[in-house]
Length: 167
Image (tube, rainbow, N blue to C red; front, side, top):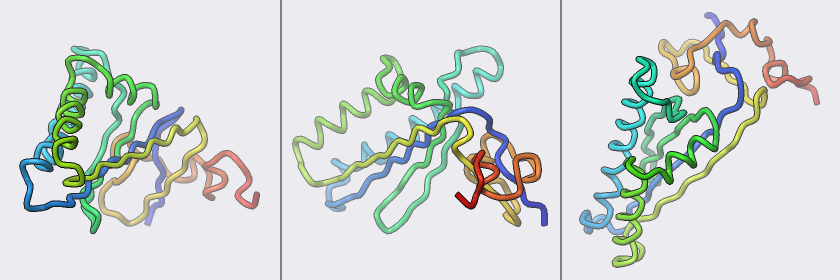
């Protein structure tokens, strides 16, 4: 079984965002937040494809996936940089800003119906590592940036992180 690692070089940002429905009987309040994220992900995927064809300027979105756990849905996103993520979030004419404004307006009318959380990790070049083995398909950063044999980046996690793993 070949071990592989992601092929991404350079810095990146990892963005986690999730929601918790606290008043399930009020889909009028949490529904718009729930449907906004797939719309934004479609917009970002369409931009990535258009930029690969040379039709649009790339927004820096590498890819993302949604997972659902006991706390609700969580979207894991990979970006070229934290700056790209923040630029997208505040851009006029793209899906995020109006969705966020709509959520804030509704949340003020019915406090506690839905909770939203996010975390952003700005990762300098050389400060991430991954290993994929026996999955049958690519996951995580490797799904969006491709993979290479582990030996190309170092056999141990510490090697792939650019430092002695014993430290």
